[in-house]
Length: 112
Image (cartoon, rainbow, N blue to C red; front, side):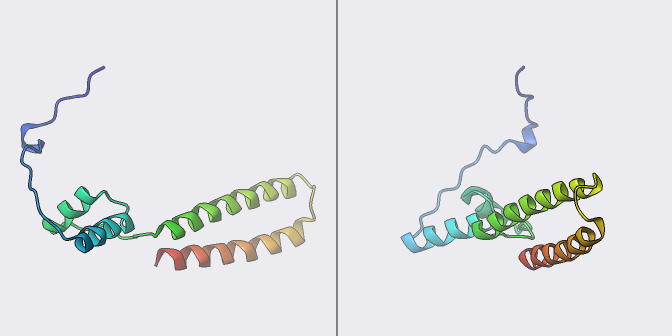
């Protein structure tokens, strides 16, 4: 199936070329990467005063969030085992609440 045709108003038919110094190019590329955008998307949003994404995560923070999600999945698997009476429920639930609070604090600090 073919891609639907775009509206004429939304077609990007004009091209703007700019010249940058090496340092300017590196700066723009790093800023775009910080916001998770391509250089073109970043420059377009900045030029048109559009809002940039709220949570600009560095690649390190993005990896930390992924790892936190994996830890959360492991905790959920342990909760399932607890519910199946493989673990002491009281001790496990106490530790689980404490761990969830810590994970939420870390996640909140990463997203601020």
